[in-house]
Length: 334
Image (cartoon, rainbow, N blue to C red; front, side):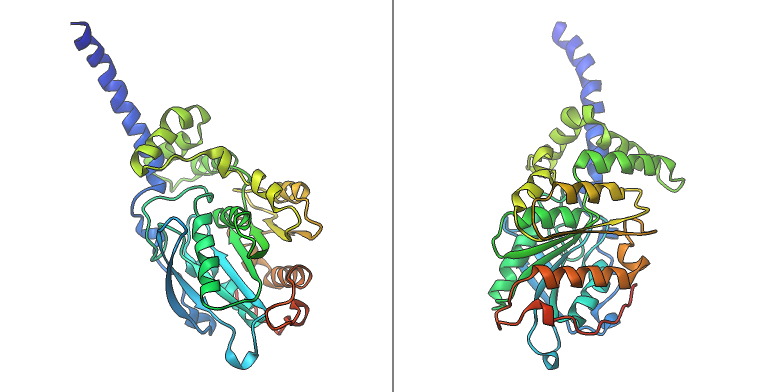
């Protein structure tokens, strides 16, 4: 009789736990077609392109565009690996790729796991995607490219870039655009925005609120995430604090939007202050939100990035300094 009473009590609790956990983890697990829709092509930017495939360091199959400097422009100054944010794919990085290629850098625009054409059925707050970026680093070297490798990531892609840089001595410099310090910090901001968004569904509001609750993270969200993916996520490891400390003398440029409501500009300032590199830079783009730091002021963005690369990137394989790689650019924000 006692067992029956216990089951009567526990069954509804278990059902609630499963329901809450499912709602909270669903946005980052499974197939989400909106993450796979391309918003542009290399042809739109007059870029040479090759669709390439390689694997993340944990075996997840990835797709990318290899966007080389045109042969008539001479040898490349290096290669920039572009990592998009959690709501995008490689096509969202094309405008940045275009000015980099015209300035003498090859670009590799990667679809991170569960996005675009890449495999994978779950994502993280950027920490696990560092494996995708490192797969890109290995791919660049396998192509025979010996010049410097620079990582440029946006949002969770910037988090991935920062973590990836600590895992490879091949990375010469990092550009972190809209990186957030921790999962908690960004989810608290997202929860506020979703609560005020009249277009957000009830299920989205519930899921985001659950995911942002620290109490429910430990009791519901993380256990359900592990159950559904077979992977345990450590949110402390996912924080970029440890990555920034581990960069040490590695050159790093932090970029923030002056009107970013998801990752406030103060976040980039805090990261800049925490970095110990003698070659560190900070760019706050006035009037820019989280997703339009480049689009709002392409000239400012390009100038800051290229100036940083001239200072930060060493001689390439041909012995040419990045200081000679500032060719004319053609700003063309999407």
